[in-house]
Image 1 (tube, rainbow, N blue to C red):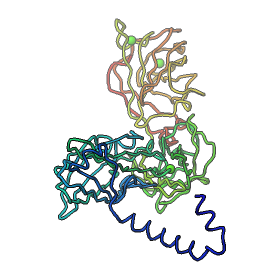
Image 2: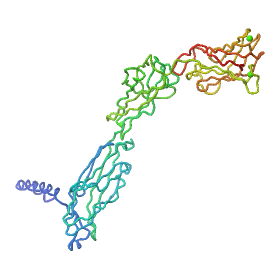
Image 3: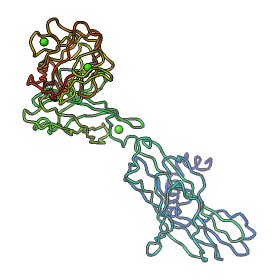
Image 4: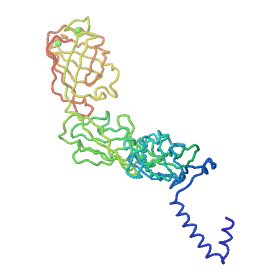
Amino acid sequence: MERLRLVVGSRHWLPLAALALVALALGTAVFSGASFTSKSANSASLAAGSVQLSSTAPGQAIVAASGMKPGGSSEGTISIGNQGDVAGTLTLKAAGLTGSALAAVITLRIDDVTGSTSKKYEGKLSAFSSLSLGSFSAGTTRKYRFTLSWPEASNEASLQGISTSLGLQWEADNGFTDTTQNSLSLSAAADFAAPTASGSTIAKTQGGAAGYIKKGGTYFVYANVADSGNPASGVASVKADVHSITSGQTEVTLVAGSYVADGVAYNYRNAEPLTANSSLGSGSKSYTLDLTDKAGNDRETSFSVTVYAPFVGSDFETDNVAGGTEGKPEKGDTVSFEFNNLPEAKTIVENWNGSGTKSVTVTIAGVSTNDTLTVSGANIGSVELKADFTKTTPVTFAGSSLSLSGSTVTIVLGTVSGEAETGAKSKPSWTPSASILDLAANACSTSGVNGANKKQF
Ligand SMILES: [Ca+2]
Ligand SMILES: [Ca+2]
Ligand SMILES: [Ca+2]
């Protein structure tokens, strides 16, 4: 260094210095293309007849890939020779692995490409320990291709932005050790995983239960979306394809914000409500969210919503309590009302979420032979019992217990007050209340629902 500085510092020597630099540059080029002769562990043996390894890339990375994503691959070649004067057996050995998580998914393939391609190794990078390359006679050089491949399916978000490297050592064993080293390195793209939607629902604009809509009903699409990366690039867009529910709506933009549907918090929703088709078949309808991050990664995830058919009462039934008198309303007898769709509990009992029981009073009244059953404390409608269970004054059952199971409301009669009679066999008719709504906000039909023709209660 000192000598070079002196030469450059002298005007007189400048032309020579320039020549020297050119020579140095040429020398470097020649060197890089020339064989490298490694150090030998035993110079005494060298004199007697030795293996001397040569390499076209001593100490360098054969593969140094960065920003790779699942599905990617990278390759590099190296030529290794025996410049000695006796044959040697060559082994390629792993010499230090870092980044085992990524190495566990990356496939390493080593081919001998000296002539026709011959596969020497294929396995996970993390599993490579050593490879016997056979005998190298004096003067032999072989060319190897190293390929690092990332299987498309190994796209775990946890692999984003991490790296791996494997040191390699070429060892010839001919009574002493002659070595040269290389490496393979790979770093993953910081963000190759599209955002994910941990949840999504379609909810009617009326509020209440989410996941159910009616034909012609208005609704919002909600989603919880998060992006991953190391670091994450961030969510670029969330679009909903709801054309199966609303014709033509294939790219509804959901806007980031704080939203709640049916008690669940979401961070994306469309700005303006959508209207379901007026002729929409009932049943499960699929819709798709298209999630894109700022790194351009894209994912589609499907969810579903239930479209409810028009809401009607479907059955009415009374039952005698065990040990009771058939035909006579009494404590423990049951009265049940069944719907075709799940009812919204709060439209039956105010502020009720449908769990547990509610205390109501059941009244049977009528001077005629067609008495009427009504319920106070719940909105269920009324029943023409078509038989005579009280002659003059109403019979009441205070503290009756109302519960909801699926789409059936059941009332267990409480303490009787008044004179209940045993009625004749009859076929009652329930008229549901029109202000009972199902989970999709369909109002219940008031068409009469007949019970079985039998002795009631
Ligand atoms: Ca991402
Ligand atoms: Ca009874
Ligand atoms: Ca009566």
